[in-house]
Image (cartoon, rainbow, N blue to C red):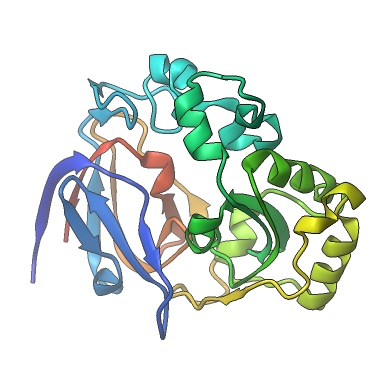
Length: 269
């Protein structure tokens, strides 16, 4: 059966824990494309040269970074410093970075600090209500909640302390290859709990929630990343599977859907 989805703004994949593998959908305009149903099929992705800013929703020939036009990247609170570096949050002080009302709503809520195995152990921070979404986006096989704080700033301080012992980045090649941390994950959690600063130990959780996931992409995959960056760029191939925010093709090429957020993509199969 053939299908064609006209070019529309793409957003990061929606992921859900399921068996035998995580379910994934690509939001393409007003539609949701079922990724799992496309595995083993030939696909064609094309970027005609238009993009929509995820903040102001204006249409541009290109975006500056992270799905934002240039103005919004420097002005929008959705692209503020604390989005990437939680320890820079200031809403708890009543001090605005870009928009105090937005920052209070975003920062002044429970945040989770976690360890995840996504090709190696990493530490991360996310809003507690988004914790499963966050570690799935990173392609993790397992994750453990090690602390829940009252706001983003406190979680950021814990993350800064733990970055002396663990990476805060995902090695996407190892993740897509299906490599897992060889040592005891519980041991890593124990070390992380001990490394939380004394004045923040009240947030530590020795019995934090444990998460597990299985992915449709088979282990042993050797990946070569590609990006649709020029108008008219096309990616064609047979879909081998999906992990995190990546679509993987049988020839080894992968595309990070999240890094293409806002681009008008057409999809055919």
